[in-house]
Image (cartoon, rainbow over all chains, first blue to last red; front, side, top):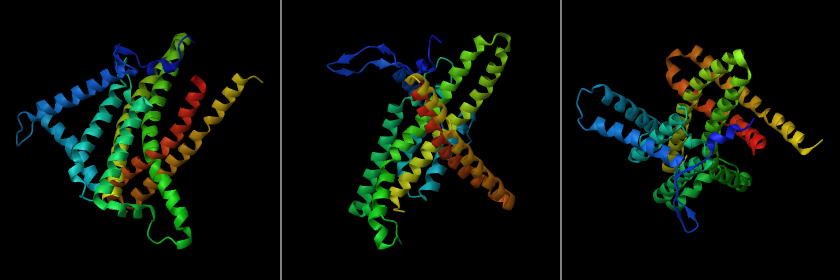
Length: 241
Length: 74
C-alpha cells in the first residue's frame, strides 16, 4: 500500500503564519471548525430573525434542538443548572456539527484529533471545578469522601476518588477522539480493498455504505454522550453528590 | 523473530479488547429488554440510559482499538 489509512488525519496548512516559534497557520482543521461555526451560526441567526408564535419548519427544527439540550441539562442537574445552558448548547452543537462534517467525503474529521477533544474536555473540567469552588469553597473537598464510609477506609477512598476525578477529562476526550478515528480508519482500510477485489469489489462498497450509516449514528451518539457527561459533572459540582 | 512480527502479534492481541466491550454492551441491552418487558411504560427513559451506558462501555473497547491502530501505523 502506497498510502496508509492515517493520511486522512494529516493536518495541512492552508495559510502559513509563523510568529517566532509559534505556528498559527490556518489549517484544514481550522477551516472545518469555521464551517461548523458558519453552519450553526447562520442556521440559528436566520431562524431567530423573525420568530413566530406558531413556528414554521425551520423554527420548529431549532426549537426541537433547543428543547432537547434543555431537557438533558435540567434532568441531570435537577433543574439547578439552567444558567449554564448557553455553554452546554454551544458544546453540543459544536461537537455534533464537527462529527457530521467529518463524514462527508473529502471532509476532515476535526474531532478525531486528540488535541481538539482534549482542549474541549479540559475546558469542561476547569469550568466545572471553578464552578464547584465558587459555589462551595473549600467544602468542595467533601466531594471526595462519600458519606457512610468507615473511618479506616477514608484515606484510600479519598485517593481513589481524587484520581477518578482527575481522569475525567482524559476519558472524556479519548472516548470522542478514538470513536471518530476508529470509524474513519476502518472506512479507509475497507476502501483500500475495493480496487484489489475487481468485480467482487461490490462487497466492500456495500459494507462501507452500511457502515457510514452506522457512523452517522455513532457521531450523533458521541456528541450526546459528551454533553450528558458534562451535565453529570456539572451536577456533581452544583449539588455535591 | 524480528521486531516487526512482534508488532503484528501485539496488534492481534490488542484486538481482544473489543471482546469485553461486546459483552458489556450485550449485558446492558439484555437488561434493557428485560426491564421493558416488565414495565413497558418506562421504555423511553430506559432506552436513554441504555444508550448512554452502551456508549461509555463501547469506549473502553474503542480505547484498545485506538492502541492497536497506533501500534500498527505509528
